[in-house]
Image 1: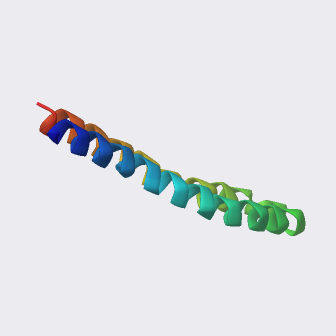
Image 2: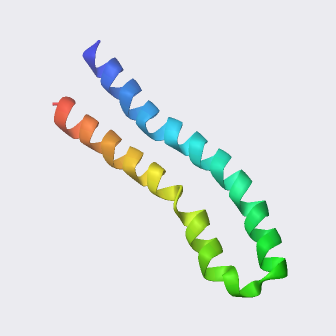
Length: 73
């Protein structure tokens, strides 16, 4: 039964940030496109703003990996 909770925790550690990232990028993408159509020199800023939410998924993946490796033994 303990393995079930570890697996569920690991899945949630990746799924919840992934959903939040998808929601954030769905808002950032169109705004960045509109800003780039008016000021193309903002392309670096737009790329950074799109990439920042991705760090949440990477952090969730690392947390899930730690949960599985440390608690799954």
